[in-house]
Image 1: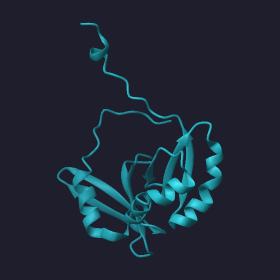
Image 2: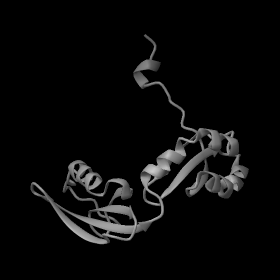
Image 3: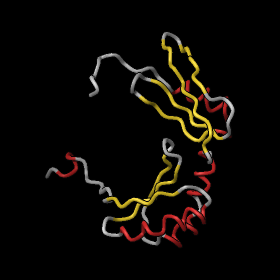
Length: 152
């Protein structure tokens, strides 16, 4: 069970920028973990650099955990996500997606009730050359803000 505290977390924006500059084309993901302590995880392609690095930003000290061995960089996943021609060939009813930097895969979404599209996952992954996960989710629907719906 996680206990909430009143301690604010450090601003990791400058740290993320420094890590992106340092590791450039090898970045497979950068994200925050809070268990067992607050730290930043950097996933890298290749085998060099695994370990833990302390970073000091002003009064904030942040531990950075480096994980190596990722098969695809974020840039490779982004390039695959831009291949709409291939994606729509396998998922004509797909409606969105994102890059999961923790898992290292491209996540594509289809409407609930279209779970059969998940059968295309392996073929789509082969065609794009990156790991693909297809999930069935309900589409988000934008609602007008409350002040827009009140009668005037």
